[in-house]
Amino acid sequence: MSNKAISDTGRRQLQRIADLKRQVAEADAGIRDADTSMNERAKDQERIRQNLQSLNNVSGQQELVQRYARDLAGAEGEIAKLRDRLGELRKKKMGLEAEVNGAIEGMGF
Image 1 (tube, rainbow, N blue to C red):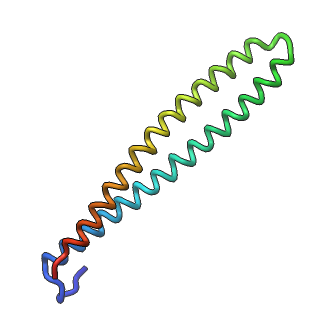
Image 2: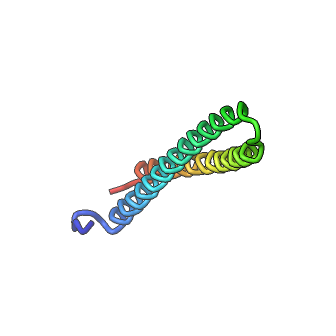
Image 3: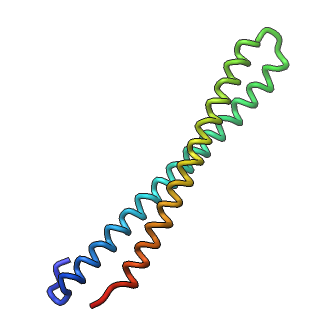
């Protein structure tokens, strides 16, 4: 931003908006990543549930059933953490978007 027709104040305001927009994009990328991870964990859980169901019909597999049950519980914990992270990221993104809008409305040339 080196246009001489824009005042220093205007230039700073535009730079602030650009920085905020970058932060919004980063939050958006974080939301997509967390959402993808959550979907992958859900698919893992479904696979584990299917394995558990098939092992219930086979005798002598109690140890494997217990391991899968632990895996399932671990995946559930990860999903809960990811849900929390998604909520935080969405809240952050909304705040940043409000800041961007406020910065745009407050611009004066």
